[in-house]
Each structure stands twice: as structure tokens, then as C-alpha cells.
Length: 263
Image (tube, rainbow, N blue to C red; front, side):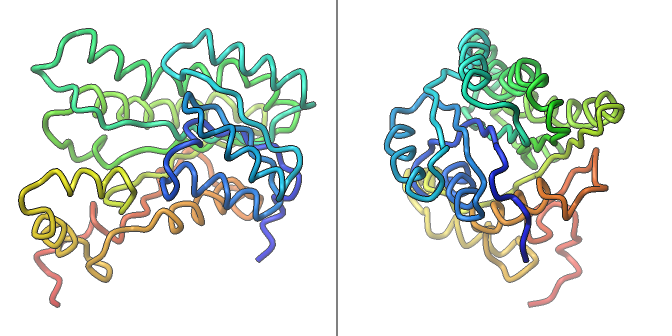
């Protein structure tokens, strides 16, 4: 299926994650479709990604940015404005489940809010004039933690709850500009960070199996590629009349009644 993403300018935050992360997977999936990824991330590996991406799409760019600092986001968007005539898509992807719970310091809690929520607002606020030029769309990457809770991660949970609120708010706010806004919600995905977490547990393999047994569809975790595939569909014109929606890519983990499912 041709998603008609060729030459679309896609601003994506948190796109310089470890190879195999959701952000990195989305970035290279975009390039393979001919879209031009413009990455905002603080990690220097983004420079190496930019070199590889340019072999697929010469216009690909990386702007090193600490996404917890709105002033750096503003500065990076100004650089984008100098290089591109507009933006077709904003993918707010950055997110760290940092464990800033009720026992955390106020500084840690506020940092979590800045990185996981305020960065979404700042990116859209500063890049909106560029997005309006193309009547583009916004995709916010969310988490099931916003709707189920997790325990021990108040900052992340509050942020991801706010992301869902902003998704609906922006969908209403930007209708007049013909700009769509949706959220893609992730549950259990086998990313490098998830693998690293499992390795810290004494019985990591048993924990992984216990989690996978609770995922109704095929008793397995969602792959980053499956998340990237859905993201590309949602930002494409193939979903041109979809806005204000929360789309779960989770194998039925959040909503299906597992007690009724038989192996």
C-alpha cells in the first residue's frame, strides 16, 4: 500500500533512541517510505542516524535538543524553519518511564512532567505555524499507564494522562485549520529498554512469560515495527478522516476480558 508519505517532512521527538527502540524504528520506517525525518533528541547517536538516513532521503536532519527544556525546542524549531518551507507531521514520541513516584523529590517529578508532557506542548506550540502551512497532522505517542496506572511512576502517569487530554484538546482546537490530532497508545512492547529492565530482575524470564500470558492476541508483546506501521498509517492520508482518537496497539492487553479467553 502506498501511504503517499514521499517527501513529507516529519518532525519526530525522541527519534534517536537505541537501535530497535520505538522512536528509532519509526524514523527509519519513515525514511523507507520516502518521508523526510527531522529528529529532535538530546542523544548524540542522532548524528550517526542522520548519516544513514541521508542515504535513503538526503533531506533527513537531526537537531540535538534537550526536550526537557522548552527554550531548546524553540531554538531547534527555528532552525527547521530556516531549512524547510513547512512541516507535514509532528510525532511527539519522547517518553521515559522514569519511576518518579510519590517518594521521589519534587525536582524529579517536575523533570518527568517537563520531559514527558511539556515537551509535547512546546513542540506543537513552536512548530504549529510550520504545520499550518501544510495542513498537516499530529500524532502523540501515549501509554496504557495513562488509563490503567502502574504504581511508582506518578510523573510519567500524570504526563501520559495529560498527553491524552492534549490530544483531544488539539483535535478540537485545530479543526478550523484542517489539522488532525490522534494518540497511539502502547502497552507492552519488547524494546531494548524493556529488555534491559527484565535483565535487572532475578526472575526476568518468568516475569516476561507472566506478562506475555496476559496479552490476549498470541500471548506476545507488540513489536516496535508493529507500532511504527500503525504510526505511519495514522499520519498518512489513508486515515484522513480520523482525529481525536486513542488507538491502542497492544494485542488487546488493556481492553479485553482475559478471564474469558482460553488458550
